[in-house]
Length: 288
Image 1 (spheres, rainbow, N blue to C red):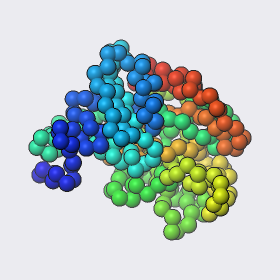
Image 2 (cartoon, rainbow, N blue to C red; image 1 turned 120 degrees about the vertical axis):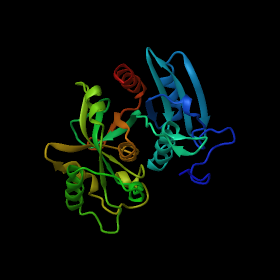
Image 3 (cartoon, rainbow, N blue to C red; image 1 turned 180 degrees about the horizontal axis):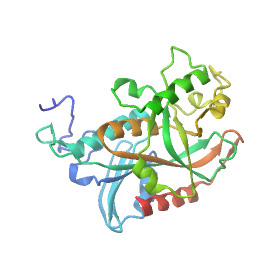
């Protein structure tokens, strides 16, 4: 059955609506970043460049790193933008845009998010790198999808809600897992593994209060103390929960690695973090 034009929207040139890309312009290896400016940084490592395109905050460069074809795409900030990016990337790979029907042979992408993040444990210094084994979504995006979750993930959800004293009128925290294959591929001593919270905002949802008081002033301390078996919550960011949930549901591999640019327990911040981002980018490009 074909999708209606109102459900799968294309631009006048036949490209997917928000990303403005055609199917042949997207590689199987995708690096996601939040900042469109960071696309240029990663793109400087690619040669030759095949595609360079931007629509709104969604900028894409597709090119080659040695023998590996890679697309670098900016998502902007937040899981709402991730909903657009992952669904449209999957459509480019797995839906015939001319007939608007799902292809009989489905393609898998390897999706790696490179981001910045704030650490929630004292022993994770600014300038270090964190690899997200599981992401905990404080957003409500996945309530609109029927997503599979492992038994471990459901146990973490239940224990975390109890530990945090999660209000019944709040969106439930959901837990999603990284690709095991990508985790092994990227594993190295410089990456600190842990669980990451994807927050739906930068200030209140991450325990920052400027002029509006917080609903729970002790939230970050409770997060800091939470343990599930040998896992702890290492950091905050704003996209990984949706990336993992959507990628897993669609049959793609996904992993997030972040440079820590602030430590919330210590109260410090790394003002010049661009050299660390460049180091992280090089590590990912070598292993993708």
